[in-house]
Length: 433
Image 1 (tube, rainbow, N blue to C red):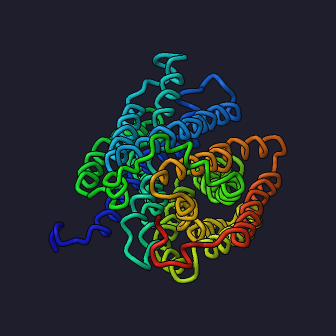
Image 2 (cartoon, rainbow, N blue to C red; image 1 turned 60 degrees about the vertical axis):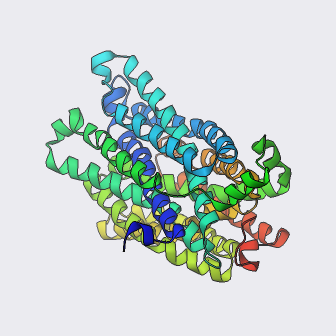
């Protein structure tokens, strides 16, 4: 089948999946490196615990920049179009990631090394801030009747796919090089490979068409002059309910993808390669299950599936660290796989329950606002808070309480949302508009 014979909605699904995968590859490389490498390369004068906290602090900095990117790209996504905005966000992310790969270490330039690292991390955050919401919006607005969730879940698959790609290349590079060489310079290779991947991503993304919904807005002269202001008119109750509903998946994703690596190596004594392999296998399950849950949501309603997903996360997070603490490799692998099975239920439709609240003229801006705030509250601070709780108490009990409380908050908020507001994805074949 030639590319010209592929239906537009499938082209968009492929393009958004490829783009978000590459964006998350870039972003998660930093997360993996902050857990395993950066404390030694950029904060060698600090104690191991303080160096880890410093590395995770730079990881959190990227989340602080994401609202800036969300507001900036959301504004232009509603003003000049979804497609071109997403092209720029992908380019910014790729360039900043490649430059991290050539940033000198503390031993070479002293204080300037972590300063440059933080600056590039800020650019990463700006780039990713414009990506996730825009990709979901573009996929929604191209989805055929009755299959909104299935197609709009495609860009959500980019998170686990990017994680698999980042950790697989990180693990492969680590396995091919002696530890000394990998810690010295080998860790830079996955960052430099971003240049090749971004070229592929841009080529795919430039080949898609603009959203028909947006084109109709332009034709009717209804493009919003101040999209964010208009997006806020949906009301504080809706905004708060969606915000609280969305925080759980962000928090669990980053506890699973980032903090687990630090906790598993430093507290439990597992090898870096074992944990990376476990996360990779779990992320494969996570990614593969997303279209299935999207299809289930098309049949039974987006918010009902999301409610089931947050409830499942609450239960699994209650046993996750106790399972890790057994120290048994088989049980630990089971704990990681459990995350890969429960995460996709809520994550597959997480962006959609946000985007469907907003009309097309402000959908990019409104979705970006909620997504980025929820990511900061739930995800950006999660590894830092978890590390602080763990080091303060020397056990994982406080971390378990923290993550279970967040999941419970999201479950309750989703239940209230279902009762208070109609789920348009369950009532109409095309809930866009």
